[in-house]
Length: 91
Image (cartoon, rainbow, N blue to C red; front, side, top):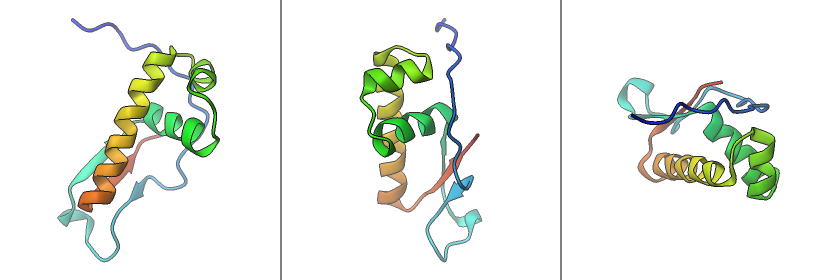
């Protein structure tokens, strides 16, 4: 049985809930969901340029947890960009 998920501090919200390739109806696209904590990790580290340790403290998680969340988020974004999938973000 996995450990319960530690609550994370999420301050940023996506500008839009979905990004998708132009000209392709949403019903024809595979969708990938980006969790709120994955969006926040990307925002803090990649957009704001914070060190992982600093971002982890801000989110209220360990540095290793942040690194794992960030790795999942980057994979999902790269998958969408590479394979033309829709990226759905929950806030």
